[in-house]
Image 1 (cartoon, rainbow, N blue to C red):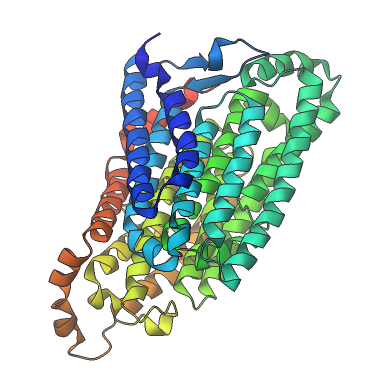
Image 2: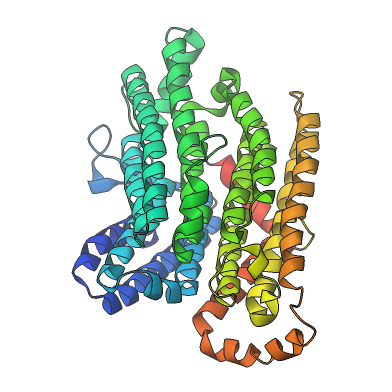
Length: 504
């Protein structure tokens, strides 16, 4: 076996083991070690990605070299490796960009605990991407949930504790449904490895013997993961969780955690149940309807907000609606659009939260819109970064969000299930609503407070360039990532299409 094929296992083991090691480190060592772990996982994922693009194949890695049913498997293809590489990049930039707030907002004795949660979260996300075993997937989903809850409540003020409690209640409901669905599926098929389950379902489903429990199990799994990923109307925990946690936590939670659940759902569609069975079950129609509703209602809620962090959080509800709408189209083109939007939303939303923190810092720490007037002049780099993220969310050409909406529109036009018209109408309405609250915010932050403010505050650019190098570097790289997705989308879309072709 070629050595590079060990990298998925090494990445998961390194980040998981680091969660234990970080507990005995002081904050300085924990900070350095955490960045080393993320960089190491990023490099290994990048090398694996290049290797798998070269081979054009996927491979399985037996843990402990024990075959099923005693052992479990990791499976890596170009889609998994590329997604892992992208997740590591976004998480690394979110941490270095929010380093100042981590040090200021978290008690000194608990900073190493924060990095424990980050390491565990990275481990669980990589495991969800690579695992080929449903029980392992459930275990790491729970690790992901606990780590995310820790990231929310680490500040330990009233709002974050309330948000973490809501998150745990909703997430426990989703976990319960997921576990019941997996138990029924195991009872029907006798397997936990994804490929073996799919083979059993391919035999059982045409016979019609176990169709009722099978559809029930699929429904429980899908609803459980929809709850955990905050599909409307299961989003009530999300605004407070994203709005009051540290900026790095908000960036990671909004851009990666919910996407990990969605990615495992896509694996269940293709690798566990089979996309034809999913389409026949009509479950995708439920996703389609709630996705469309989420696209509209998330934006309406965002318009009504007077707090920039909560506005961005409600925007995430709308963007998750986009992803589920694409899944609900039930076609490969719709799936490609949804996967691309996972990348687009992750790059844009982390950028928006990071940029918003710079704007609020220069506005006396206030997140209220009335206090943010002219803040882009007080922090020029954050102002530009927020504008780029806003343009992406609206769907302006050159940015990643434009490609997402174009792909969704193309998927709708090619749909033969009567979903074209509602998709195009909701895309148009949602885009107008996106423009209302994002462009309003961009205009506000570039509205000078008084005639001399532009000249006076522009003198602070040098201070920003020299005084906050990590933050500025993270913003610049996030902007570059968004523009790359928007301007060089063709090879990325081809990668997703090819990856999906060997995904099942």
